[in-house]
Length: 431
Image (cartoon, rainbow, N blue to C red; front, side, top):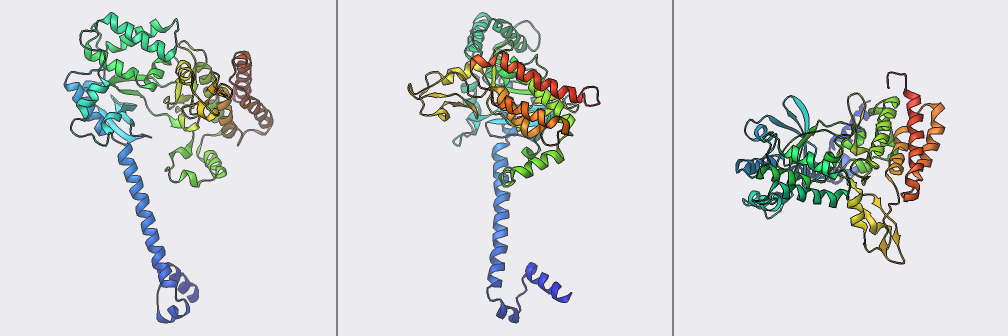
């Protein structure tokens, strides 16, 4: 026992008696080196975490800039007074993935909310005290003084046509924009109100939220001030490893990530319910009232669910209108399909003869979602369901984005999947 204690003491605390140094001459140097290496690595990790956090999380900058513009009368909105004068908007946890898009959980009028604001112009390394005025010139430059409401309506319609396509439903969407701009219900749109709503429309996610407001799986828009806006509270994450520090994620093997998902995630029937909601969301994105939308970063980190396990899309930043994707691909020069990629994974084939990108995507939304669901639903699935579910998900992942396949075939595959999952959980507490 004494020898074991002495050995443990040797390993942990590196005692350096003369006799011991004689037997193990390099031990002292090794121990000192390992100790300093540990201190250096720990300090580096702390520094990286702090510098990354301080760069990504600048909600205070966002609030200062927005309130400065509000007090000057340049912008307005339904939450400006609560944010800048009454201080009723509480900023809580920073959820930002990049400095340009600030995302925080928060509290507003006793409701859990998500606060989103873009501050890219103020994060320029050369920015100093002129950051706020420069942002005013860049972001809140339209419409200009003297613009009539008719001109603003036409300006908004042209913008929506360019981003969503020439759709017969767009005049109704323009009406929603003007109604939202007139937040104080005085039957007129002031210049500050028009500047604010125009700046909001430049935010891709806001445009998507506006287009999908009638859909149950998109977060509800609650209010705005300038280009800062509030949505419903952050939904629960479906991919629990996404909450791990970024430095640790690459170190986890896929098998361990799958095990963590099963241990920390919901029970399988709840996962099935979330998956049904995700499939319904794919339906909503396909030929909706305001056109078709593509999911251009298909990861479960962007998927969420409510306290009752109803699916809720947590992040719409990487969902893009079909018109926007096609405009990006049109006439684009390429050598291979990787050159025809919009966002993270909206990829079109490359015509190598013409050296131009084609218009149809290689993988539609449904195929990419089914590839996610194979890893999300098959582990822990009931034995009597696993084989058929695996077969249907494999079939689904082979779907292509060609226009000839999209209509009937995709609808049939999606319907079969939803029916299979729903039959398993219907008439139970999970339904």
